[in-house]
Every structure is written in C-alpha cells, then in structure tokens.
Length: 202
Image (cartoon, one colour):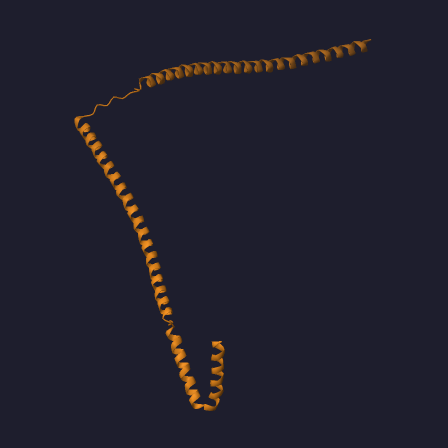
C-alpha cells in the first residue's frame, strides 16, 4: 500500500509538472499571440492612416482637376472668335498699290502666255510650210530629171556612167591592138562577132 501511495504521489507530481509545463507553454504562446495581435493592430492602423491620406489626396486631386477645368473653360471662353484689324493709312495705300501691281502683272503674264502660244503656232506653221516646200522641191527635181531623161531617150540617146565608158574604151583599144598584132586569130574572132551581132538583130 505504501508502494501504491508512493506511485500515486509520483504520478500526481508528474501530472502537476506536466500541467505547470503546459501552463508555461500556453503563457508563452499567449505572449507571442499578444505581440502578433499588437503588430497586426499597428499594421491595420498604418493601413487605415494610408487609406485616409490617399482619400484626402484623391479629394485634393478632384478639387484641383475641377479648378483646372473651370480655368480652362474660362480661358477658352475668353478667346475671341473675331479679330478686328485697324490698318493705318500707309498700310491701306500700300495694299491698294500692291493690288494694282498684281493686276498689271496678271495682264503682263496673260500677254506673255498669248505671245508664247502665238509663237508656238507660227513655229508649227513654219515647220509645216518648210516640210511641204521641201517635199514639193524634191518632187519637182525628180519630175524635171525624169523629163530630161525622157527627152534624151526620145532623141535615141542614153546616159552612161563615165567609168563604164572609160572601161569600154580601154577594152576596145586593147581588142583593136590584139586584132592588129594577131591577124589570123582575129579572123575567127571577127566571124564570131558578126554571128553574134546577126543573132542579136533577130
């Protein structure tokens, strides 16, 4: 029984130690939790203050924007839509002289354009006349040449190239010299020539 008492005492002590230990751990956890809650409360206060500052900045921005919009509207409303200019007498005189000069220059330009167009027309007409004259001149020359050739042909004459006549003359002289130097062979040639001419006449 004493053993049982000792065992129950030691179990009670262990249980008490465990309860004390558990209470201490709970106290530590509670302290940590209190610190965490304080940190969270501080953080929430900071966030709330930042939101309030942001809200006040936003309000200031809205007020500033409205003020700027009003100033801009006033400025636009004050811009004149019509501007009245008052010119001095010298400026009016200058503008009138300038207008007269422009009218004179316009007339001068139109006259220049007219002269240019007239010149182009005269040039084209001159080219046309020159071309026609040249064609007629060539036609007249060729007709005159043909008339001369026809007259020569009617008279029974012909026109030959001087080189051909010279060659023919040289050949004739060579043949006559050959006939003179070779009388026997020349007889055969003369017979052949007479036959050739007779055949040609037929």
